[in-house]
Length: 137
Image 1 (cartoon, rainbow, N blue to C red):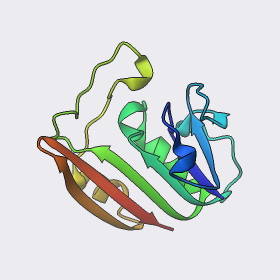
Image 2: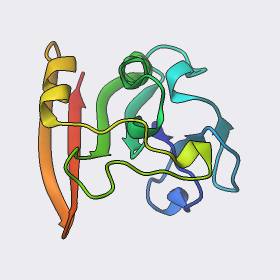
Image 3: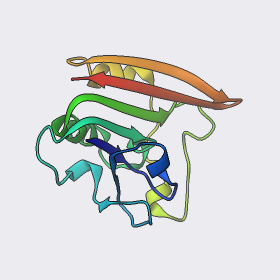
Image 4: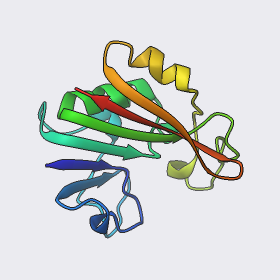
């Protein structure tokens, strides 16, 4: 089983087959409404977890990572905007769409120092820079 965290309003069912799609707000694509900082799943429930553009929205990104580690058996994939990206700080009228954090690669290296991980900083297009992290459990 695969966990897709923060699937939001897009149709993730076509992107990640056989996944459980979760988000903090309801949409037609969400299977379970919950907060990544307090996941309602047993330990090691999922082989893989994806949290793409989620950590920048939560109150405590370290707690969210700990929860992902708790419920995942093998691989966690995380993507966030780089601190230097044009969209690192995003304000929105919808409180769930606001960016509360921006990240540097060194933040992930420090937080994940006890875990095997691979980090890539990649440009999306001019001015948009993302950090993608694979965490191997």
